Length: 122
Length: 107
Image (cartoon, rainbow over all chains, first blue to last red; front, side, top):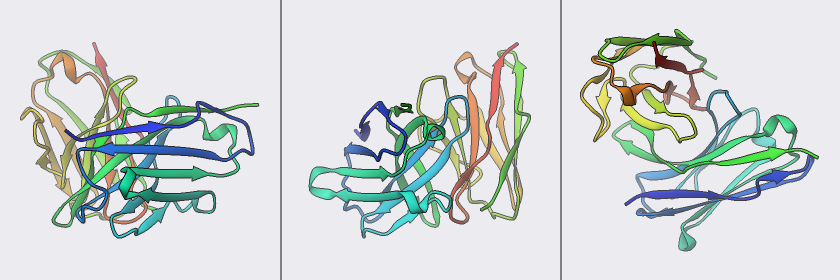
């Protein structure tokens, strides 16, 4: 059974750094045909992809947030970590981690964590 | 980045209705499109990828079509559990981008 679970602070202050952890089970972060993404959703708004990491440690970041994001993984702990610096109230959102799976040239987010709401406020 | 738009943004429908949601990409994306369903307070759920391939376990009343820039998601016979918000997402190029969503609620 594939599961992903996000953990991290529910409240951060402006200018602080957010660190979120995604703990996965039911698959390995060393699987060549899989990866993990972080995606966020401000209250009442649409989904926004932030970053991903694959088994070979290939990483990609949102163009607009690239300077603030770092994604990493610890395969032995089955964890993917996202850090976002210089948090602002506009970063208030539910943050999801999601598994990426491949079928040929197609890839998609087939399993998602439950999400964690992060509020940025002083 | 490729911009995704959806229409309508929301609408009301009745159980048993056939409903169609449209998604348009700002440039051609071949068939590199997925559809997700999201219910309030829940994570999105993958319905369709490759524009028309049904994810395992998804009911056959859901179908997708299209290629290039124009795509549709059809629910052939709306069930009570289908009232939700639907998002399209392109994975033709980075960054992957989502549409703004279409909310389907009860008439």
